[in-house]
Image 1 (cartoon, rainbow, N blue to C red):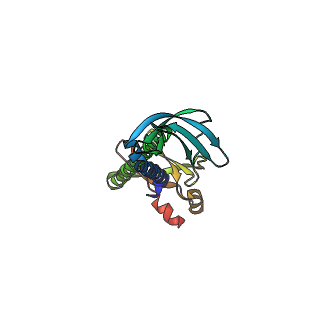
Image 2: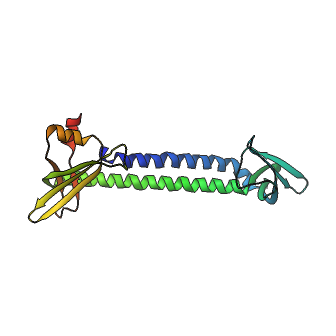
Image 3: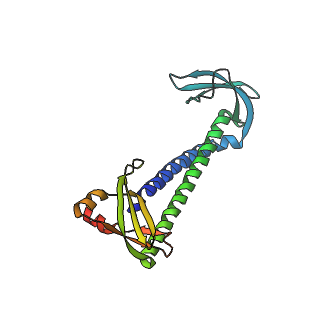
Length: 220
């Protein structure tokens, strides 16, 4: 599991923020649904935008009166005297919902759903890779590969070490690499003067599993 730590963290990020977006949009949707169900669509006017109090004032006409409402939010797309779409509750005209609010709720729900989908995709990929690694450990051919290089992968901070291995069979040399080793492998290799690392490969060498378990043990 440790070798997929970065992917797992990314998946958790997608899951957490996806749930936040979906929960927020669901709460807002449930709260505003009675208004939307009994809605009357009218054109309203932004009468004032107060950035100090973060308040927007909306005016709209019902069948019997003109209502001014205070909205405890600032929408940068709305300016004073702008015309906007308002939905008010026909049973209680003081209850209202802006078209912009409805769009935001839907957008947040879609974003949350996409993030949850990405979590599922990342999770499925990690499970696939784990199953492939387990299969290679059981059925793959073990070869001892020469350490070509160990470098710092500057694009990764939590698992920054990149290792490149090589194995020569006949006239052909195969390269294997791992871009995000989760411990300081360079210090271990230097301290114990390790020259080779075991790799489990498929018959055509297209799939491989670099076995770092012994080096990780030395690191503990």
